[in-house]
Image 1 (cartoon, rainbow, N blue to C red):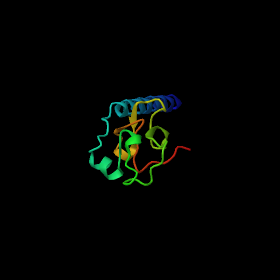
Image 2 (cartoon, helix red, strand yellow; image 1 turned 30 degrees about the vertical axis):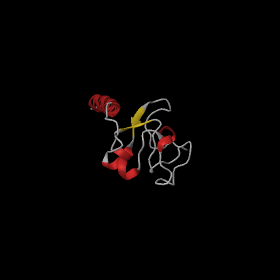
Image 3 (cartoon, rainbow, N blue to C red; image 1 turned 180 degrees about the vertical axis):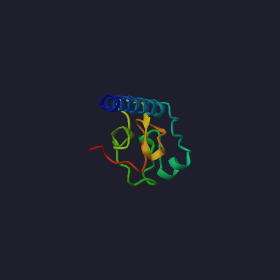
Image 4 (spheres, rainbow, N blue to C red; image 1 turned 90 degrees about the vertical axis):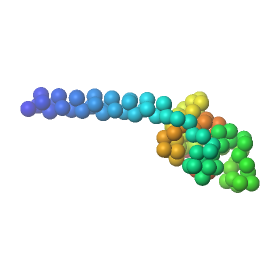
Length: 104
């Protein structure tokens, strides 16, 4: 019985690891968010944060960009990375939207 439990645990761990890697690869292949995407329009997303219209987005402050937002799921050097605000679609490193929240 111990052997079967051990086998089950090892197999389960392997399956979970495979699923985690597969979902990470799927996110890396996710499409980029277009500025005219309905969610992007609603959140005021711009691929280049320096082009944010401060009259329309008064919350924006210089220096804010996707790569230093807590929702950006990539590294600081990733050109694009998934963002949960856009259903896992990829946002630009230098982009910005009104859901911006500074990374702690």
